[in-house]
Image (cartoon, rainbow, N blue to C red; front, top):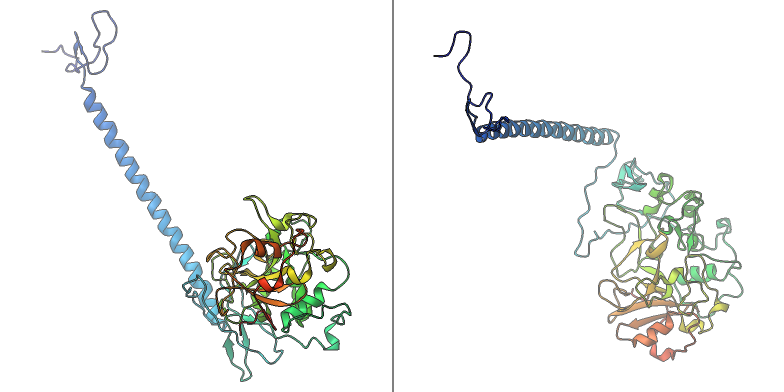
Length: 408
């Protein structure tokens, strides 16, 4: 029996080896047996597992609370907008090409349009709900704005007179005429209009913005604050204005349906910047003196007198194919170089609605042609540069058409 005052011997307590050193836990010593190591490991594992489960439950509860708060905020905002009388709109159903076709609603009057409050993320509207009042006093929902141009001949428009050096070969149609008037003005022209303090070309204004007054759309032009990027909240809602002259009538894609540029109005045409014969070559960034350069550069637009290859043989504007982008956006959205394969079904140039697969082009002299996708690649490449020291037989350039894009 153990002596009075002493408890029962604790296995492993005071255990030592024969050398006098303390016995390791789980080993046998002369003073008793050490507790098995497995038992200790099991107790510690059970405690750790319980702690992890408790932490997981706590994190899950916090996540549910946060989700409930966000959902409540969204529902509260939507109910407030509905109470204010703003129309509710759901997400657009994308078509097979990733865009939701929308119908342009003609507007014959100059009734002011109203833009509902729009949440912004990175300066881009994520769910706009524009509308304008109708003549009956109610509200007619318009998925997109359609700018109603004033007459280009209206003296109050402030447009410059038609230049005397305008090309006599200009095709019919508002876009070729506007391009010719813009292109014929004196002074330097840019493919992308920079904003002070912003060096990102994609947030700069495209050359198409400068066409607006020449299309009789100076009202829309004057709404923009060109001192800040188009992504700024003060400008972003005007970027949703559909400009029919920038669209191919045979193509039903009018507004972007992706997440970042949702509802921004599109263009089906881009300026030709030249030939991109290398993976890292960006033709629009080349000096216009480079033999690979085309009409459009980010910093400079070549003038007619700079086109030594011949204006009737040089592409100025071309159909963008399946890749369409906002007309207001600078960079590759509205200026593009020729990169093989030139008429790739997904990434190449092209225009819908032609008699056979190909692309509608506006030449530098203002004439319009439909180029077949079967055109000799070397011939097409020669038409993309302004002074590549090559000449092209225009009879190889496809059918000349009287109007641009000529798909009506």
